[in-house]
Amino acid sequence: MTFVLCVSASDSSGGAGMQRDVAVARAHGCHALSALTGITVQTHSGLLHAEAVSLALLRRQLEACLTHYPVAAVKVGALCDVEQVGVLADALSGVTAPIVLDPVFAPTAGAAFLHDVAAYRERLLPLAAVVTPNRQELARLAELPVDTPEQVEAAVLLLTVPVFVTGGHFAGEEIVEWLVRRGEVDVFRKPRLSLRETHGTGCALSTALACRLAQGEPLSVACRAASAWVGEAQGRCPS
Image (cartoon, rainbow, N blue to C red):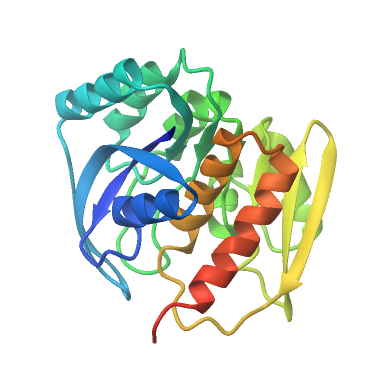
């Protein structure tokens, strides 16, 4: 059994967050351990409300999962307040398994999750095997505009960890994604599909990537495969 620890919030719509993480892990043959960061009220149109769990409860969830199970990878999604950043950083500081950070500062529509990006950048980024921002999230992490390939490269270099920039939020007839690490750049291109449902795509991608890393795939292979899998899965969503 391959155990992947998913740290994220519950989504009342079932399309994103922990509900999506568990489904994606199962589809990849992995067992999803869960540490809930909060309870959210969402629809497929956006985030309406979020409440953080207590720091003590988050800490105990993390301790139980990391102590009693051979965690092969960690996926971190939405955090609901800045204090959770410190609790999570402390809990993960000794983890040797790959950590995938999905910097969910806000969903595609609706209210925001975490406002203090500086704390996230300082405490969590150094622990990451890879971070998976979309265009808006990369701009917030780097505090730079990100509208062109040149701006993507400049922003990524500031983060100093491997970055897989997802391409769905950039304009164009095809989706272009970048994996940047150790001075190397892999560019992935794929057709832009007319998806009936995009809610939860970031959650699905980061969890699929964590599962593939847990199963031993190299980072470049895992990024390409996870992105392709999400496109296929979203294309099968009912309208």
